[in-house]
Amino acid sequence: MEHPSPVVILGTGYTGLVIHALGQARGLRVLAGSRSPDEHLASIPPSQRLRFDLARPQTWADIPERARLIWCFPAIPETLVQGFAERVAPRISRLVVLGSTSAYEPAAPQKEGAAASLIDEDSPLNLALPRVRGEEWLRAHCGAIILRSAGIYGPGRHVLDWIRQGRVTASPRYVNLVHVEDLAGICLAALEQGRAGEVYNVSDSQPRPWAEICRIAQQRWGVESSKKNRKPEGGPGKRLSIAKLRRDLGYTFRHPDLYEALDAIENAAHHKSERL
Ligand SMILES: NC(=O)c1ccc[n+]([C@@H]2O[C@H](COP(=O)([O-])OP(=O)(O)OC[C@H]3O[C@@H](n4cnc5c(N)ncnc54)[C@H](OP(=O)(O)O)[C@@H]3O)[C@@H](O)[C@H]2O)c1
Image (cartoon, rainbow, N blue to C red; front, side, top):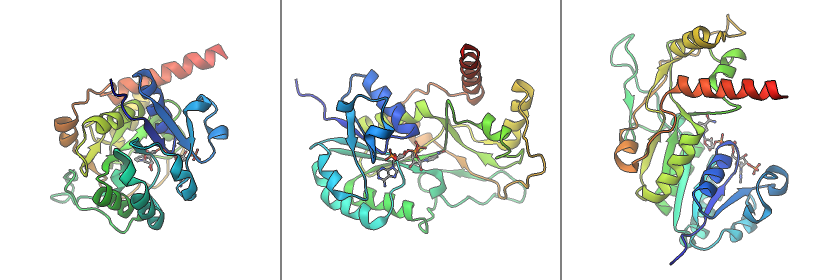
């Protein structure tokens, strides 16, 4: 039987580490790329590490033939992205690129005071952003599948801490979020089932106003913002549609409910601190 080609993670940070663990658990051959693999990927066996630096094209040659790539850092600068597309794309089999919902222009509310309209994959892009141009280049020239991700949360990085730190306020502004384990699963689903050259929005499907999250954080966990008088961020925020992901990728969410997921994260952190 033919072995499936290796999955290579370009940029193994917060999300990449979870993709690596999930791929391993599924019996895939996964290589984790980093600019400093020995320093940054000490938790991964050396045979599963790869030195990769977009700024050092000599490292591109170490990507195995026919590999399936998941690109997990901003696709900039454009000249290097274009060089990568020309030299590496012809010898790989699949490319998934993690983008961000910041690629979309904010949708205007349909009428004053109403919630922003839903954003789907056909919504206008902000091509003034270099990373968006990089992603679009990879999509047009290499058939890259672009995943435009909502805010990523999970253990060690989540909204309750952002509220505690005063980084967010109880405004009517909408936010879209996705648990890092679901994002990792969706990256692998896109490698398997995504259509080359397509874009998929990624979130837990539930845009929420910050005011709702702050209210539930206070009621359920007693979490309050440390900076009460911080000026709220302007604009209505974005409400993301993931109908295309649901239709085409056949992915079942492990963490469809933000508040259940936050409860599990808080409990795990509490038990960990008790053990120390
Ligand atoms: N954080 C969010 O809420 C959010 C939301 C939407 C989208 N995104 C996007 O989703 C992607 C993954 O996010 P993340 O938070 O998991 O990222 P992350 O933790 O910053 O990991 C990305 C890793 O890529 C590597 N890297 C950076 N520049 C590189 C370069 N020029 N060449 C090679 N490797 C490079 C770095 O690892 P080494 O130093 O080890 O090389 C870095 O740790 C990013 O593109 C991010 O912008 C993030």
